[in-house]
Image (cartoon, rainbow, N blue to C red):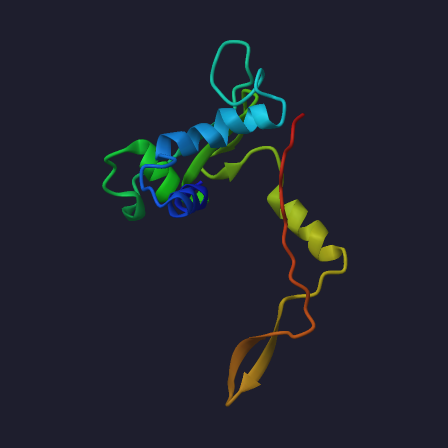
Length: 147
């Protein structure tokens, strides 16, 4: 959101273009409308899916909070999300995933032929860890798309 807002301001050479509130509106209801789901998601209303995130704005990078929209758009990080609720179902509470066994996913991924991303070496009598040139980068991505 921040990048979109900043690019719009730069392109138009107008700092008032695409305010933080407008950026949030684009990221929620306007995005839902863009993918044809504006009647079921994108805002909190009776009969719509309850997709909510709770964001912790107590960190030093979000202070002071003079405008919540501006703080969410320009200062908050994804790591500030504490709780995620999708279609009324709590998926993450206090940064703990409730619907997936992360350890089992990691074990399954590591057991599927992934090599470690570093190797140990002994240098001058002490152990060091160095990146392995042939090791693949492994990433576990958990996503839920509901259409």
